Image 1 (cartoon, rainbow, N blue to C red):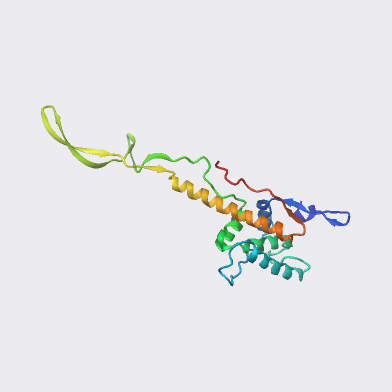
Image 2: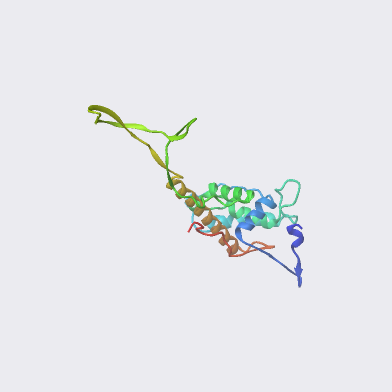
Length: 218
């Protein structure tokens, strides 16, 4: 059953479908296949709050209001007006949250139905930098770090001092970067949710307060 067929009427009024912001984004970009149209920003200093994003969405809503049939972007079909508004809101992502780069990331993840990989269960482990394999198995590679004279069987001999270079895998910085990227995405979704709730421009969808876990690794 399609989204449109689930919309009913009660007492002559619209019955809205309640979605969390992540589900709404996936419906917008994955189901309705709305396009992300990124506008040029006339004033690079305006990068805080909802100012630019909601102004842009209002302009988009005004354009949509002239089209009774709704969206015009999905090839071979109808794009729901609410999907156009949600896409326009994402396109207005402020620079303080990543701007166009983050808008594209949010849309691409939603279109794929994915959540950013925050490397669940990742624990840095000390491992050899290099491992050599032969018919006898695997052995950590070693390097010469010095020499030492030792007395063996009544004779002084010079022997090499070997060491095994090690590293941490995954590196703590990799884990930190992945979780920082997840947090940036979460902040962007929070901004989109607040903008949609504050704007009140959706006709058939109501955005709930539901959000993905803020820090699922904790």
